[in-house]
Amino acid sequence: MAIKISVMLTGSHPMHDYIWMAGQIESYGFDELHIADDLIMRPAWPILTLIGHHTERITLGPAIVTPKIAHPVYHATSLAALDELTGGRAVCGVGRGGLNTLIGIEKPYKTTQMLREAVTVMRKVIARDATPFLGEFFSTTGELLLHQQPVRSEIPMFIGTWGPKISQLGGEIAIGIKADCVADPEYLRILRDNVHIGAERTGRDPSEAEIIIGPLCSISMDRTAAVSMMKQLLAIFLPFTSPMKEAHGIDDDCIRRANAAYLEGDHSKAESFVPDEAVRAFSLTGTPDDVIPQIEALVDAGATHIAFGPPLGPDFKESIRLLGEKVLPCFRSGT
Image 1 (cartoon, helix red, strand yellow):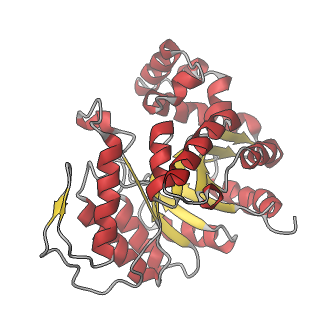
Image 2: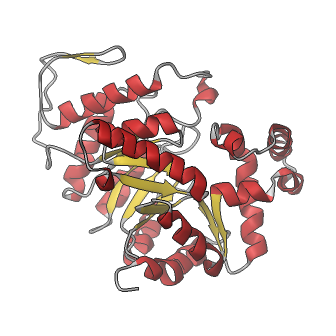
Image 3: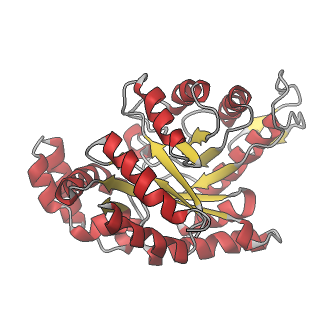
């Protein structure tokens, strides 16, 4: 069962720690390393520059950047620079952003159109296409021409989403989608079917579309510690998971209580409000023997690429070792 297996890190770590973290991840043979570009942590582009300079093989990119925070031209030039630094090892996820409410964006307006235009503009910049573009959200003039010659005129981009409608866009205009926080095969099938609808809309073979699944991850030989860490993360993150939390029937009152307790500093109380169903729906949590069957079920449901998401586990070095030595080999050719 050969699929891509990757890792995502957030911007929560001290900057220089990313050097040895990326080194460990690359040494185990993971395919890609994604860096989250969350509003409340260190931004992705400087982290990617740092690890790009200290790695040799692994594909690198942000997952995801949002044109709501910075113009797509900025993201395009940053992506081209990363591709230059790494000798053509860059990839990029583009999405609406999961923490928009923190900057007062309660209901994103015409998200599909915004992302369609953003990807169009980014591709034009990287291809050094100076044809003017006039969109509803973004525009460029004929004078906008990247001064340097990019290493590649086209850099792979995927759409970051966990919603069905935008999954269609990923199948239509990008290499596919990345759906973070998804660990339920039934929900994955919904996203997969919508990616295929988008691919078929443009005459593309649906089997060529990438379905990258980025479940939250807490791996340890201490199952209790792994679950505890995951429930604490979910106490923070569950409020931002629509429409998945509704699809899984996660009680809003439990979400509010868990989040409030965590913000008040009572982490044990916060854990008590996070249901086990949320752990199963959004994450791969437990020992390697616990999560390998979950990954197999995700692959059977259509995942072509698994990207292990935060927090990875109670002990980073142990978690990466377990993933690299116990989990990764199960999904390589000939195994």
